Image (tube, rainbow, N blue to C red; front, side, top):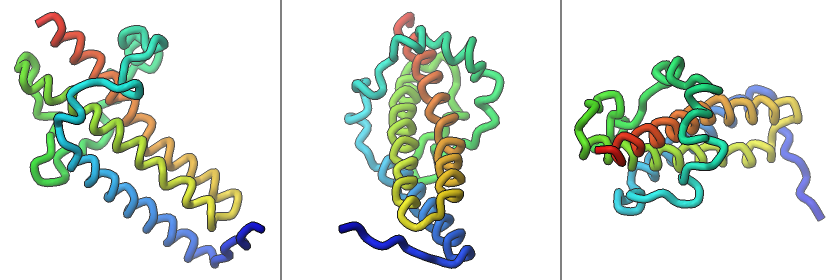
Length: 161
């Protein structure tokens, strides 16, 4: 036996989508901010560099991330004690090491943020499912890719120094 679909007027669907996305993104960002640094000081199967990334060449040559990454919003310091990645000075080993940790934190946060999409399937009409999927991907995929790009570059520099 399946549950009957939830039927809502269009304005309520739009409002519910905004509330769910904003609320879920805020919760995920806050919880990611609270992850102890020691849990993020090493790569896992999820954050480890993959073969297709070709030591970062996939991001620099194929996606050309270096051309557009600075156009993305920087929200690492939105919560007290957060890490503002744009303030990183090149060459400071301890700061670059912290940046590597923060790329993992951000990667986990953006993966979790996409988790709101399945909830939106419960009440949206089919056309709005596509809109919500597009939002989940557009709002998070570029950020995920930049985190991986930055981590590979930083790890390369740190391994030489």
